[in-house]
Amino acid sequence: MRVRDVFLGGIGVYLPDKIESIDSAVARGLFPADEIEARGYTGALVADETSAPEMALNAARDALKNGGVSPQDLAALLYAGVWHQGPDGWGPQYYLQRHLVGDELLAVEIRHGCNGTFSGIELAVGMLRSAPENRAALVTASDNFGTRLFRRWDSGAQNSVMGDGAGAVVLTKDEGFARLLSICTASYSQLEEADRAGEPLFPPGITEGRVLDYKARYAAYGRKLLTENIGSELLVEHARRNTDCLNLALAEADVTAADIKRVLIHNVGKGDAATYLSDLGFPMEKSTWDYGADIGHIGASDHLISLHHLLTTGQLEPGDHVLLAGMSPGVTYKAAVVQILNVPSWA
Image (cartoon, rainbow, N blue to C red; front, side, top):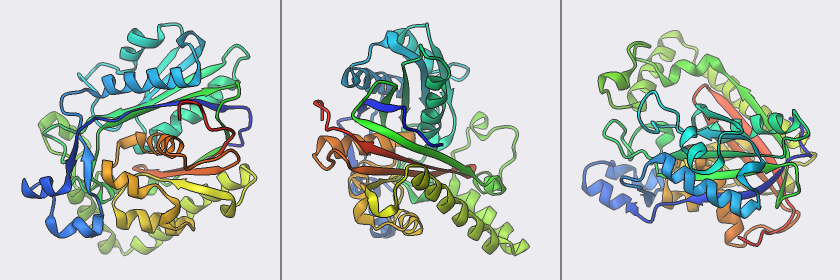
């Protein structure tokens, strides 16, 4: 999607004060010691008993304040999460409605894996363009992975260590600190089985108290690919669709890879991050992976938290182009390009 008429008005983040070290996780038998170097993490943010909606509320408050936007200016609230947000049968977006933005807007929870923020931004663009009176929208993402049915340190998801936290961004028609130039999506549903292999569709594992274990699922899927001898063709198509999504986002932003100052990706394991960036044609040095290695993969919040980090540490200047790219179960591929217009006063 080519975009020129939507801006980033403000970003807010909530990062817990507590960082648990990888050495602590190893000592407790939660992380394999022989994988420390390969995965590269030093620790992860841990929110303890602070819920995901509470973290989202704090991030959203900061995003609105930083963007100079009133809750009454919002046409939509889009809430992304990866893990369980609260009591089953309840929507976390309504917590933010009650405590922050009120009832005169569309509020929706997005379940699109770690790419949920991208999907929220895409939907926000459509919402803002749908009516002249729609001036701004709020996209939030939040997760607390500290539950007994999730292995924070070794879930198997792209060799990640999962951290807790939240990010939020205000999208606005009024000029902000950055202009959204493009945002694109591609998918490859042929690979959806990879993230569920070896488990029945019903009953859902969480209802039976099963721990989420991507390692076992990927192993089961790998055995199937070997049996059917189709793994190589799936991987080729997987890589093609990923790069096609990136190239489309660059083309619709009217930039080339050489114009990109920084690349923001999910805070996945070091080896996976290096491979992913290499497939896109970028070195690790252009990413914020070193920062992510200290805090963990924070679900759908990674890109907002990383962009906030670059701004608040003086690593971006007016005119810089930033590429945001991600991949999540589905498989879905996302890419977006933003141009920094000014360094905001809150940075």
